[in-house]
Length: 93
Image 1: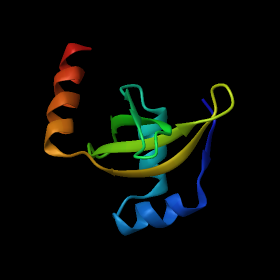
Image 2 (image 1 turned 180 degrees about the vertical axis):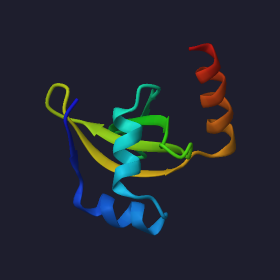
Image 3 (image 1 turned 135 degrees about the vertical axis):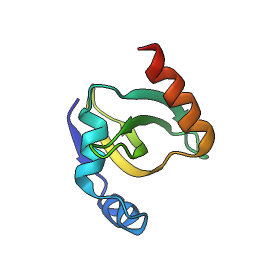
Image 4 (image 1 turned 90 degrees about the vertical axis):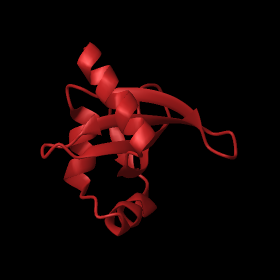
């Protein structure tokens, strides 16, 4: 899946202390979990849960576009519930 960056995504992740290479590691990692969702405006999005090389748990949000392409919208640390769900999922793989 080819990814493009939404221009503002760099600013958003930088404010959260997340590096672009961490986002890409989650997106291209072997153990990533896609979780479909919608924006408050009803736009279909996809959260990709995964780990960075240092084990940091991130939720990377992308917006699917043309075919299998997607735009990286932002990234953040997983909350406690998401971490628990992801770790349970990891153990089942």
